[in-house]
Image 1: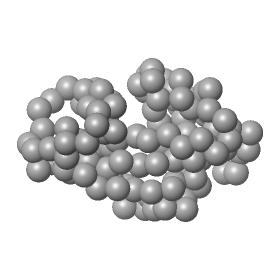
Image 2: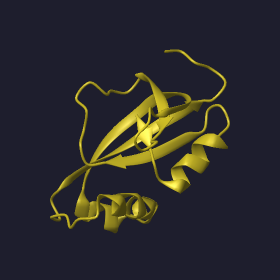
Image 3: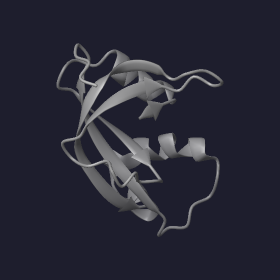
Image 4: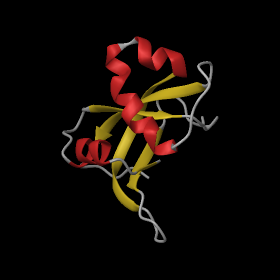
Length: 108
């Protein structure tokens, strides 16, 4: 899974083992489930993505776009979602994905 927002990249690079980061995606990959081990990479345009660390998917929580505005803890989602540069219908689905960091280990 690649990341490109400065705030998330900082959380990943400076994260300690066991920290959980949250990312919000509009497309859900059906093969991504709680307990999955994934590689976290930094998006590098026109090049191969740069490996950062390994993570474990802790949860995948579906939310409607309108719900992101209703809960203060999802306010940071709105900042991340701006990168899509489009307007969303209030019922549009997003997924909050919680990933536990394992910066010292490479499992895959």
